[in-house]
Structure formats: structure tokens, C-alpha cells
Length: 239
Image (cartoon, rainbow, N blue to C red; front, side, top):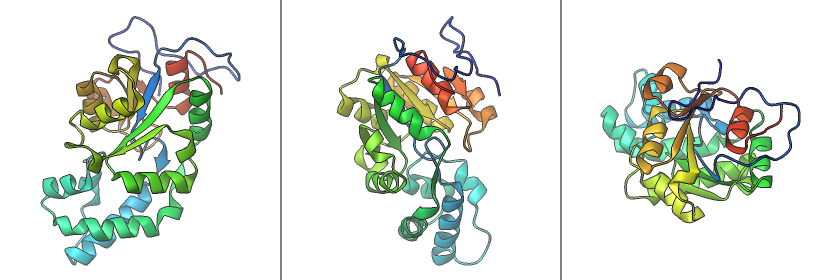
């Protein structure tokens, strides 16, 4: 999928970067990432944990996972409310997710992306639908936690996505103004949260993100490779 040019900027989106690029003046000083579907691939773990929780609390029948993923990025209790499912599913869902954590993987090139952003002085944070404790635990397990400056979970703000609170909190912890930042997510709710917080927005499709849904939300950029984000943020990258 080609890179989509930003609707609010005359500059075209970056092409795939060369094998090595010298540091260049950056377009953004701060990057706020969603977690699932952006840095880590937890989709199958999520599917199994949801099925376990559904059968423990609701009982027989097919767990409505396809509906669940349409709410991706929201705080789990909010998803249960929207789906009309018992809030009691949260406990077994969190337990099963923790038990299955070893099956979570990191998307290709993500560690290199985060390391290079740090080398170039770009501050980074996570703003996730997970609780802060769960997010930090999985990031530590997959080895990404040392590469990030801040992690904010949905239980650490008054209102989770699509409200701007979680992005505002991430920027506050980093001491960064929204005009210097970009919010990166694979779901419509991430784009809405970043836009409401006053940041630029990037939709990504290298995970489970739907290009069609993201394009309809009109993020500033739509990217399909992690190194394209490096090129966008820093003005250079690596292949």
C-alpha cells in the first residue's frame, strides 16, 4: 500500500528510506504510540483470552470476538458496556492474557525504530487501552520497555480514548506540547484521541489496522511500514 500524503501539508509522504541515512532535522519531537497492533502483535492472544473470559462468565455460545475487535483501542470495561456484556469478564480476560503473554510478539523493525528514535532525540510514550500495569508488564516481557520514555494506561486518566485525556497525560509526562507531537495508532479511536489532543495523527496498517476504516477517518498520514514512520518523524530512516 503506498504511503498516503498528509491532507494538511504540501509535503509528500516519504518513500521507503535508503539502507542508511544520516540524522536529519525532525518534523516531530515526540511520538505517542498505541500499543496493540502498532508495536506488538497480540491479536491471537486477545482472541483466546476473550473466548476464555466469555465462556467462564457468559457460558455457551460463540464469543463475539469480531465485534470486540471493532472497539479495539478502548478500555476493556468500556468495550463490555458497549457490547452489553458483563463487566465481570475483565478478571478472567486479564488473567488469561497474562498467562498467554509469552505468545505476544513484536512487529518486525519495531525495536530498531524505537532505538533509532531515541538516538535521534525523539521522546516516545505509549497511550493504550490496556491498564498501565498490564501494558508495562507486556512491554517488559517483549523487551521494549527500556526503549520507551513513558507508558500511560487507560486506568490512569479520567476518560479513556476517544477522549484526549490519555494523549494529554502522555505529553504532560514528557513535557511536550501537542504541536510537536504525533499520535500513532491502528484504530479509528486512536486517530480521534490524537486529533482531540491537538497532535498530528498517523494511522498504521502493518498490524491488524483496517486501511479502509483509517482512511475514512482522515488521519494526517497513513503508513504501512515502521521505517516509514521513522522517515516521517526524523526526515530519514533505514531499510
